[in-house]
Image (cartoon, rainbow over the protein chains, first blue to last red):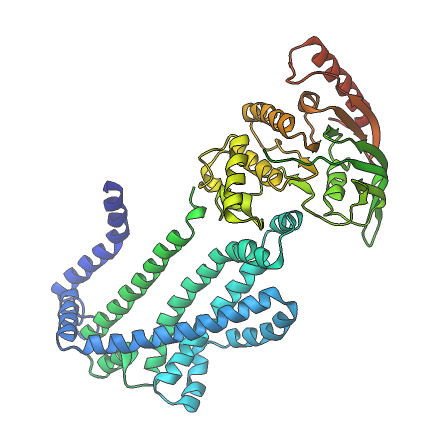
Length: 252
Length: 256
């Protein structure tokens, strides 16, 4: 318990000091309010969007898009990664396409995708799915390819059949790498949903950010950014916890 | 009580050449000896002399050799569960418990399998550790589990590639005793590659000393001592000295 308190103290010390300095500077009138409102003002803005319900609406819209985008992206990326991992032929076919996809930044795709699918949910889900697909594919394939040759030797010596070899050796040995890909991709999904909503759309956290900017509501802008950060950290921590639970065998 | 098999292994004029684009390296040159039913044979020789290559040929992992390696009269061409293998690293899968590692790939029905696993764990002194993960047990225990994994498949012959090489001196000493017990109980034919001469004298019926570059049989010692052996007896010491001398000869100008 004491260790835990020290841990969180260490983690929070820099952000807390920065916020205190920020508040002091604002109180002293050294920062122009429209450029950077004081932390307390940002807090009030946060309370306001919670109370008027707009945060809830935007958050749910964005979360729903992330959920569906992730489902599609993980599903496709994982399947392609597995198939490429098990077959060189599939790898030769799929790999170049993924490589082209990954070289073009997500922001470059957005205009075209909007042109094709409009500014509704579909285009958002496609953008997120693309952002998710790439890290999941790369890590799945990499995890399978990187299998220790000693384990391959072992499976020959034990005369394991193909299915046992895949399910008991290849997949478990690749699983931690695949999971890291999943963590990367969830954070990619979360950043790209905001970008997608800013570049086209009338709902979601990204749109709320633009809206706050248009009305010069910099306190609300910062409150929204803080919400985005906290949710992102929350996601990652949940996945981290899950990772520890699933890969217990890695702990000493 | 479960029946354990023990096969005869004949190595007849075996040679192995490794070819790369630039050159050919003769790793093994006309090695012949026979391992009898239930016999414990150690192979020693200078490092890089091809003893591990020879063992890998017997495992069937290394292929394309000249001559014949016959297990119960059948030429070895590929790996198979008639040969149990214990690697220097225990090579247990870290994501499986000891029990699951033992059971890996076995198609026996569950009830029977659980019983066999329990018996096997008891034999290698790991009762109660079946549900542990490899990381949770010591190096010596992991290596015993790895021996159990090989033996539960009832191999004709057990191949041990420096099985105790990665262990600390004390654990190694104890494990030699464990290995002796397991062999006395099972009477499975065993071949062990080692570089520890005392270990070889302590465990083996015969010791094959190999020459290096290319690998040939230099001498074969028969150890006529009853089990369990007393490391401090005069006879043991004599054997040890003789094998050391032969080993020196085979090393030649190389530094041990």
